Image (cartoon, rainbow, N blue to C red; front, side, top):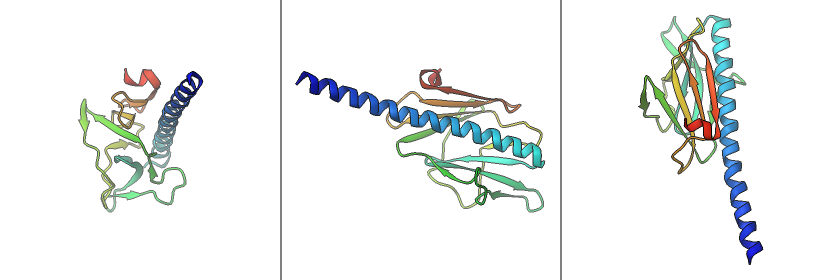
Length: 157
C-alpha cells in the first residue's frame, strides 16, 4: 500500500511538472516568434502586429495603402497558432490587465505593435496552467523591443 501511494504521488508530480514544461516551452516559442516578427518588421520596413486570444495568437501586417491589418496565414513561422489545452494567457498593457477575447475577430485587432523602427508596444504576457494563480511563464517587452522571458517560479515575480 505504501509503495502504491508513493508511486501515485510520483506520477502526479511528473504530470504537473510536464504541464509546466509545456507552458515554459510555449513561452520560449512566443519569445522567439515575437523576436522574429520584430526583426521582420525592421528588415521589411513594415509594421507588424500581435493578436492574442484566450486560445491562440497570430501575427498580422499593416497595409498602409488600404489602411488595414492583413493576416500572415501563408507564413510558415508567423501564421496563427493555438495554445495547448489547459493554458490560459493573460496580457497587461500600460499597467492594466487587458480582457483577452475568446476568439479571433474577422478583422484583425492586434494588441501589440512591432514597428519598423524596432520599437514595440510594452507589454507583459503571462501563461498560466488552468486553475493556477501564478504564471508558469511570463514574457515582458519594453518600448525599445527588448524581450525578457521568466520561467517557473521566477515568472510570478
